[in-house]
Image 1 (spheres, rainbow, N blue to C red):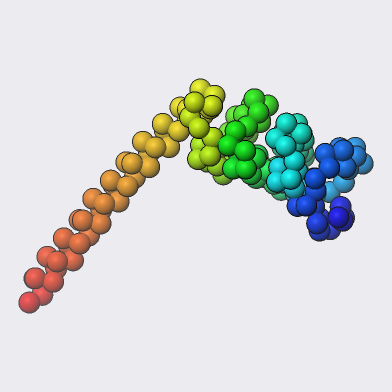
Image 2: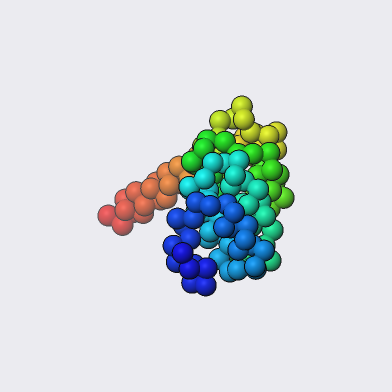
Length: 152
């Protein structure tokens, strides 16, 4: 593993190595925390993902959010600390995909209330957008048909 280039960090499976790199101020901590999410138990990876989500480098924070989504996909659950970190980031930013992964892979009964409300919002909005698109497609089809008849 090369902390300078980030090469091989997705295979990181030692939380102590991530902690030491964090203390040294290494680059690519967000990338490495994805490796922890892939290769370590959730309880070991979670505090490091939360710490990485607070890094000053926006790109590395984005990778840390990806790690949170990866943890949700891999485990079908998240820790209360990860839920709180996702809530602090909020939808619409770097945590948007991680929130989507959480809504997809974590059962509703295990979600905190704010994410249950988000699931309802996303579901209703998706349904309304789908219906709106069906209506606009139907209108466009009818216009095309009517224009074709006028040209004859």
